[in-house]
Amino acid sequence: MAVLPVVDMHACMPLLPRQTLATRWHFQALAHNRLVTRYCGHCERHQFPPLDWCPGCGARDSRWRELAGTGTLYASTRMHAVADAFRPFAPVTVGVVDLVEGVRVLAWLLSPELVPDAPVQLVSLRFDDGNLLGARLLEETT
Image (tube, rainbow, N blue to C red; front, side, top):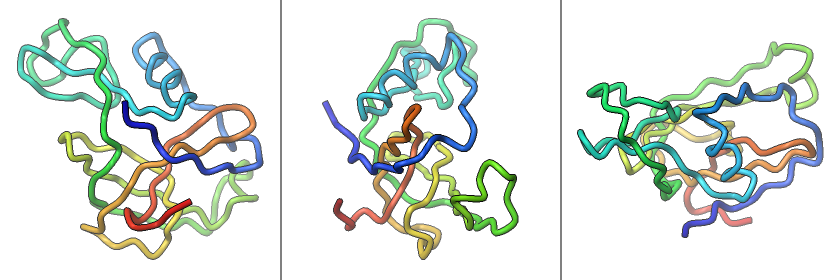
């Protein structure tokens, strides 16, 4: 079982993520510093965000599978003008990460100097009221 490194944010989340029946297990696993998503046994693809059906083939026989939490940065953006809820964290850098399992996730970048194709490690950002995905350079340690 791969456990994501934890980064304590010492604050409440700026906005609580919308959780559905399909994503509930993802957020519960993230609260335990694990990254899981759905895997379709029919077309053999991971899907993120987790859904009750496979967007690739339409099958409904997917199951939960743990992800390694490593990949490469596909793209990023740094926001200086942010909504009021994010003001204490500004500037905020977010990025799209291509995971080794073939899915893309959106993550809060803790290493603002990251450039496309940089190797990244996903981390569990521990807020006072829940966890979110973050990413940092793969070589960094806590």
